[in-house]
Amino acid sequence: MKISLKKCHFAHSEPKEPGHVVSGLSLGIDKNKVEAVLLKPIPQAKREEQSFQGFPGYYRQHIKDFEIIDNSLYKLWDQQTVYEINEERVKPYEELKNSLKLPFKLHIDSCGEVLGAVLHQKQIINDKPVEGTICFISRQIKPTEERYEASQMECLC
Image (cartoon, rainbow, N blue to C red; front, side, top):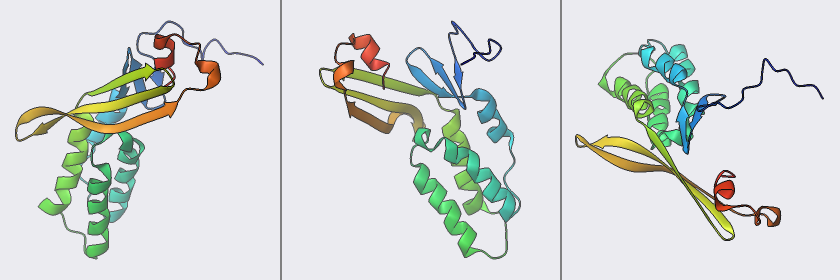
């Protein structure tokens, strides 16, 4: 096996995984990718609309109520044979874009035989910032992992 040093990164404070940035105990979305979505105009045709859907779908685990927003877009595709831009069509796009702008927090805990994590995101509800839960992750610790220190176990999540 050979390793290419050009492709290796050592001692980075914010390493980039494909599409994500890991910083300390937080997991975030790559700002360059988010910027591309935020600058993208509202689709003017059905094909553009379908193209737009791919990116937010990649980050569905980071977007609260993604399935509800996404489903409303699919319903609009089926309902209208003539493509027209209106408030009903623009609102879901704005919701998706706004949800990508807000910061995330990842809370991890391990105790004994289990490991768990909760992904939170600040959201604006009635003009007030509220921390909402995006997803939960949990699993049992394998027998070989039981001898790990607590900080090492938390990295397994």
